[in-house]
Image (cartoon, rainbow, N blue to C red; front, top):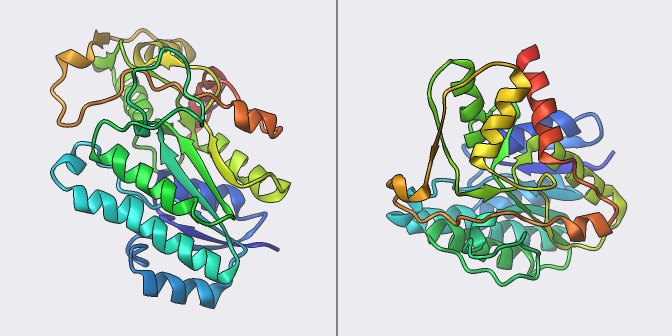
Length: 282
């Protein structure tokens, strides 16, 4: 059985990786409290002792606004930590899977971004994630998967999760009517990761989001339809909300490269349907 080392194992994506892949792989999980991925010596020692076939890095600094005043923490978590994992993976002959973000783009496009589109982050968070991509791809056995607006899982805490919670609570839900995204259901991201690991598909940079795109208003309306109840959805503009870090308005990503590798991602509408079913069964 293939042995996988999972970092950031207590987070939204990491906990889903551990849960969904435990039956297929021998999982050795590490939370951020158990392993500081920016500590190169500690990372190499742990990896050498474990001898994993692959390392799945779900550890990340995700405070988009906080990164504007604390750039060093973002760089440590999203770049230096990835460098340490990449170097250790290369040393022990392991494949590295690392997750990046749509925030590497400036949002000025009018069509879904492909992997070959020039990156132009608007803030420190996006810059730190882009640096992490560079460090990961320095080794030939790395997959970098750009995901976006992750939702679902037992550690659900994203914008989609908060929108659903607000609807179910009967509270007014403010959503952007002018930000376009391609949300990523954690279950589908983990399934795609699994397929990459066993397929022999060439390592490199891939977009890994649910197929299609919509505004946050579209997503809120679809969630309302799926749960079958009326909701107080309040459309707002990005310009109406005071945010420390600038957000890219158009963030849709294209899965063409993944599709050419015979990995098809379900639509975001289908992902929301399955997400709602799981949520209501809990």
